[in-house]
Length: 439
Image (tube, rainbow, N blue to C red; front, top):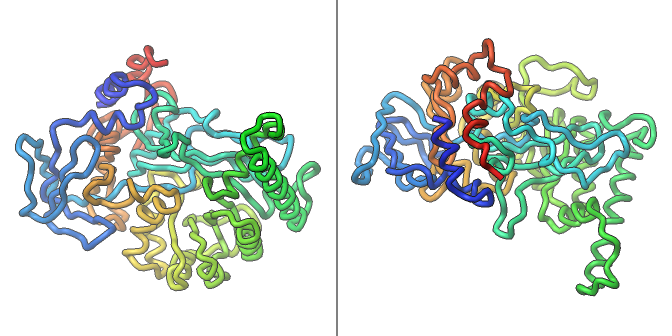
């Protein structure tokens, strides 16, 4: 199965690799008889979903037309959900900034992700199809994040996505609280943390003004600064800030900074969101929460609560979920929605939080996050209801290509564990053999 996918990628230039898998699937595939949970719109019992060349081309009830020559898949009794979106992950043995400074906006996780890590296969086994891979939170700004599609591929370039202007899709990681408080040059207090961020953003404003004033005259342009260039993208709204924050006062500080400098923000973790849910909603700031069944660790997370999702939903804030893998194992991501519902969150908003809400936070809702005609064919086939602890991920599809199949012994190994499941080379033996000619 993986060999077929790689051969499809090899047939195209690396620049088009991100779209290549979408074109590999021919003829159309019609999934017949499943319960469809589109997220946008009501559930469809005994539904039909047709995918072709990486896109969803038809969806509806039993009377939905199936193209001539389509491959029919009988999935009666199963549930089909959009591919899961993880807005905060560390898969791929990712690294970010070092100990030389607390703010390092020039660092790119692109340059450190291991695209052959078994963590990627384990994420596929959990139904994840889109992830925001981030550096750690030990800095006030630890680097540029990267949005990945979990295709089967041997290089990082084949997992990335680009905007219409050619820019890699990704945000930037910022943090406050205790993680970045350590000996100089790092800050020693929360107030100094905010002051250092302000100082750097002011420099970015000045840098942007100088570039604008130069009007293309190379003699007047300031010396190029890669870090300030990234922060200018933040100020201009081209790069979303994913802000690691836990305590209620730190949450409000993050919101205060975003208002002061006008940048877009997604709050990550927000352990004490239930204390300031109304303020988060009033600021129209989205929150990506983590739901863990064994709280502990940092003192600042002692008041984390399962009702975070319910409190944010009641306040009217946009809520998504993340794994922070390996804090929460990607294979168990669906449990987050189940535990949030148990604590009072509505079923619809919890499932939306696993899919479309996360896609909106990554500016990707036009392509992923729901089962909708014209969107990418990212989907998960489940053995039962998504909120049941007994439900298993049976198959995961990215852009119309199956990347996980629980009935395949190799794939099942990543789902359940066992000898070889963590071997970063063994899981990509076929990819390595087939991708030797890649440039």
